Length: 290
Image (cartoon, rainbow, N blue to C red; front, side):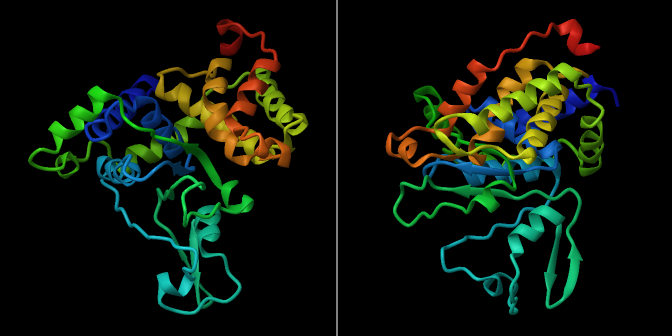
């Protein structure tokens, strides 16, 4: 399948998901970017904005299984598996190595495998921030936000008799998804674009409001996400604009801000915007193809 074919098939998945997630085309697209990159997604937003529905709609659109675990601060691995686990981070192992180990026996997880974690903002009572090592394992962080008035009316109409999620059918198979995951790696990324990616990530490390900037894992995520975004747009090469589109979702959750920045209520997304404004890029579309 050529690049335009993949774009059409992934676009069909996006359209299918948007039958239940109204007015959030960019956010749905970001979720699919992570999906074809084999990346995990952190959806952070207030209750009732469709976080779990998004995960279910993507799974049903691909004919994949969906399993949900409700995490609380006192949840132990044994609460999930039913056996005792000593000195093991079960979620990190699943995310990083696509396997789980129970009583010394390792089980490979199915392929494709994706963790889509949903979390209320940390300002909400009873919500605890994820540790930095866990956050860094998430490929993308996105927020759905409240719908606009006309979109909320559409939600009311859509759920008048039955939840539209119940009508979602498979539009793309897991085998096609695996082929798309391979095709992403072949999307051309010019040397100048690579330098731009690294320049953006390096700038997060020297920003005065940042205590700890993005790691090389952040550079890898930004580059691969840009390749996936280009594929979804039907291109076989990455543009600097792709990098700009993906910098916030792939890097903001990897930054640890200075204490004074947090006191000023400065958002990591604001830091990323400042970084993008400060790092120059001079690359034409012709040069990006080369």
